[in-house]
Length: 87
Image 1: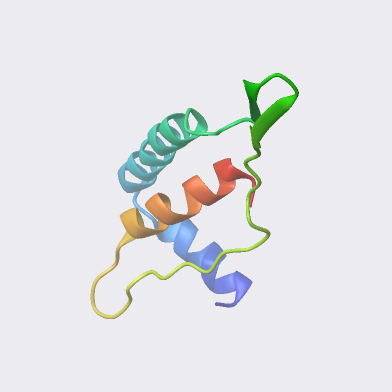
Image 2: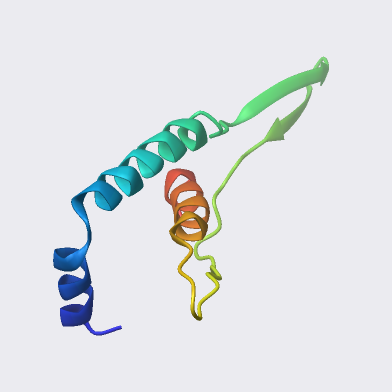
């Protein structure tokens, strides 16, 4: 999508719709930020440990249905978790 088409769409977006989308993003970010995992090591026997290390993948592909309808929630619910995971 050309940058100017994106800019034009943003300018034409109803302010109430934009506010609702921004609130949806804020809420999704809050939830997914809490799902981040950290490295955890468990000692199973003296001198023996098991370590879980959570590392985000480098890239992801996202699918958002197109056509006659728009699905902004599909963008929010796919993009925000990836961003919060560090992708």
